[in-house]
Length: 348
Image (cartoon, rainbow, N blue to C red; front, top):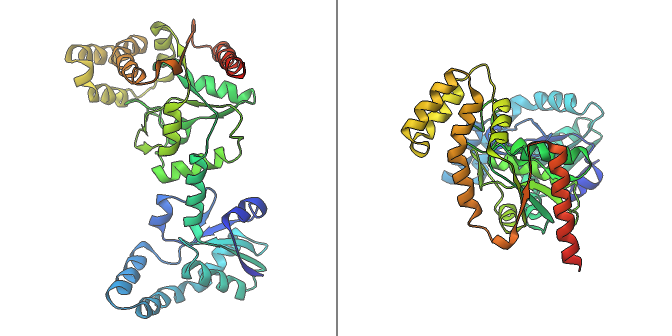
């Protein structure tokens, strides 16, 4: 069987089948369906040359060059696809369901693959679906708080208690400050971040409360989807208000690395904002491995920065939740109580 399916049909009925993305490696690296396997029809260089011929000469000449590049790889395409789909059942896509995926799929079908589906409009259709999900209304409960308040730990606790949560920093591989990338894997592209976020959010109920951290438009180098960011900015924010000393304790524990050079480099990056004297003191404390004292010094800057952002919000949409320390279970209960109170007020 060789047929076309929509991206919605794939997610509804065929998600168990392996997906092969035949776009070039560079296209795949920029963004792809999570779990897809890249078996490129063309290399980056070959794709560029085919595109140049298409523009400068003709479509026919570009197709002719494409066949020249592809012919020596035909057996490789079969072998690589069989490794991905031993039972001969597979889903194929390119950028928009055009010649690349159609020809690849026909080649597999002609070589005894029993079930070959091509995604109609390809990766372009997937991206359209991704962005549409972020644009729909979500019942967001935004968790705010100064740096070190334990917001991420709180979200993880809520997740363990079967509440709907999204850990944006976890998906972005960045904790959101100049120190945020230390000890983290390489960040995805913004496009891949959106794709990974989609895979989490598509399983959630938009009408039910969704707990999400208050984030800037950029998390490290990753940009948030604009439509979701706008919803975060306009939603009620539940501010986990923890004393600075308690927050410094949490940060000292989270950033107690053997190699302190990345921490030193991060401190140097905020010299202008922290101040020359404070930077010098922070570095001296760091090299003495006094992480708690370093955290206290750094929070002088971060608290002012977060407060400035908070002042841009509608004061009627800020709920202050005083907390004694950063214990996730206790603070999660205080948060849930505050959310419940707001829901009762809304109902009445």
